[in-house]
Image (tube, rainbow, N blue to C red; front, side, top):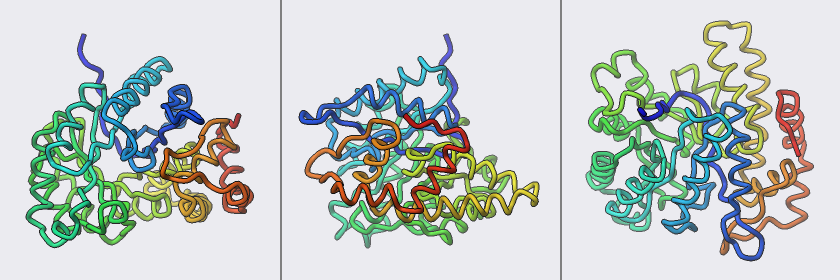
Length: 337
């Protein structure tokens, strides 16, 4: 039987939280199964063991368990063609490659790799070393690799548009970049090269199912990104309101061909941008608290990350930005338990 094709497509990807049982902090696989199916039902693809998934707090064996559990849940629910992307970035090049291999063997389709930031004092000013990291990882990974540019979690290292574009043209197993730097100008400059129709023929990918995508790390510029030929976003807010974020992407793309849809796209983008600004400040614990309120699962982060204070969770839930997003999600078909 031939393997199932799961292309990496423009759209919305949700960095799935890793859920833990109260007290023991063991993996809560039942909550994970429910959540990956919930986001898939909205047309959102899961990303496991990323920042939101507390990858730093997971053992290698736990990562494998998370991947296998998510794949089984998606397949059982009829989402066999939904791809799974997994965070595999860690301290050394060697271990990062090992994690890519383990993820592939467990059922992952794509990897996303953050720049190693522990020795940022050395690497931040050594462009050659940073470039060599992504060259070697992508060359040796058995699955396509997405660059994860997140200065806040990599010691302040911030890849510029020239370096990302170079990597895109020179490394055929790179499948995109996530810009959690939030730099729309950088996104525009990268898209000016990689989103041209000639790019795919001039710089073919090793895996034809994995074109080079330029993805935002927040939801507040999905509409703007569409107009410079961006490809969507990987965003934590898609855990809370997957139908809304998927709808925003759909409207943004459709408005390129039908300008009458632009006012509605702008309206939804405004609601989403305000909610993202408010909810992102509450971090992983805040997102989990909202999931608990909406869906009945969420729990706390793994220590030493602290849970959100009860009064802060109540304020986050009651905030007008949150409530407007929840109302829109409900109107678009999101079901709350």
